[in-house]
Image (cartoon, rainbow, N blue to C red; front, side):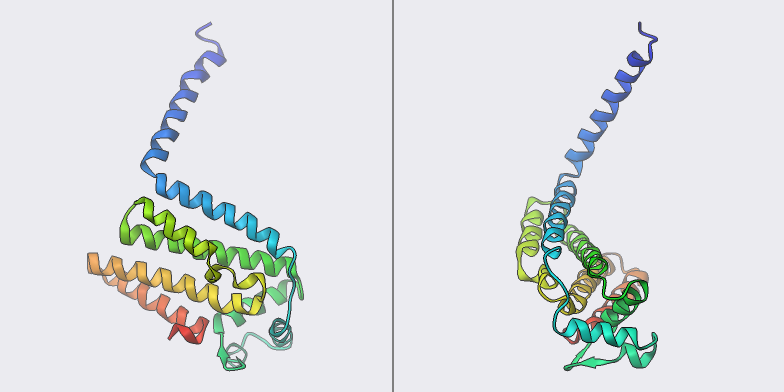
Length: 203
């Protein structure tokens, strides 16, 4: 009986379970953060399913469908808003499938996931794996800062890339202050450039 496949699998399963428990204990903040981010994405995917393009969204779609990915197109200013990163995203999506809200919603969720992961990483870099990190993450996820695309996609194209770049820039800068490695300073400068190309608030 001890040589049966089931008998051999039992110790291995117990070892894997114990390893998972140890990992969760050692990475409780990270695991909780990832779980919350996943739950938020499911919730906001449902809300996005009840929305659609509106107002300036159609200007972005029309401009992307009639222009190439040129400097003139990327630096197009809509009502005083220079949004190079957002214009590039719209251009790619329009070339894949014009006027596709499902694709636009998927892009919004990818941006939101990236922004939340960047915030979680920044908070853990600044404060370590403390329970307060989860509270700050939840405050962000429930605040208007993470909700722009649910009512106006154009705002998503400005605000989420800006927030993502800001969080990554802070993380890179803190790593530079701690290590004095030039690569972290270069990363911080690159993310600042992305922020400034995402929305005028980035300056």
